[in-house]
Image (cartoon, rainbow, N blue to C red):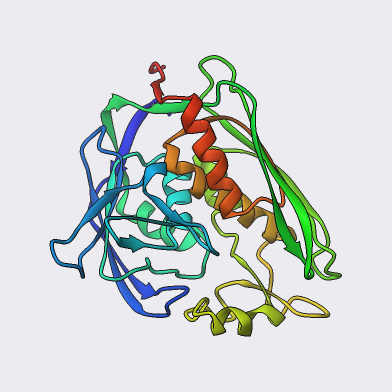
Length: 293
């Protein structure tokens, strides 16, 4: 897909925000070529807007939040993943609250509405950020109360390569989830069926803790893969739904760079590491157009 795209018509989506639990209204509006992805708050004076790039990142605690001049908008990663997966380059996202609607906490919630409206090709080449040299970040995640190392590696793309390949390893000592692994090469068709439907993970014993911190107030048993002590509380969409959702998150977090070409190798990575790698890639790579075919 060499040409930029936007949505064919305005889209309005309403629903509950995942963490604050508020009912919010979101409007997606087409933008001209070379505009990029923008987010705005219609509930604030002046209705401020910010471009969704790595410089706008303000928080990665349990979600990805961007902002500017003291205001912010959170939990954008699943919508950004859909823009990445479907190849949407230019769009304005306006919300009347501090988070976007969560739906079922997968990408499918947004995919269905966007594809119903349709996409429009634009008379400008897509500008890919190519990973030009090996780059990596390391960190620590908690596994059953114990710290465990996590890593995310970016590897160069072949010349003129447009594809993004992701290898993700999810490990857990939990007897229900076990370890999960998936290799995935991004394209719009497989994204819709293989990645977008995957929901976020929630361990039953962590839900009350999250809510005590003002998080996950808008979640329910239909909007996550709920993991109990002896089994899954609700029905899975895929046997490896957890690792598929992790790939969804990476696609969203890394779309702060725009379309990305290269290879990613992830081991237990989350929003914080995703964003750290995005900053490193941004420091060594600049978006370049890919010739039309």
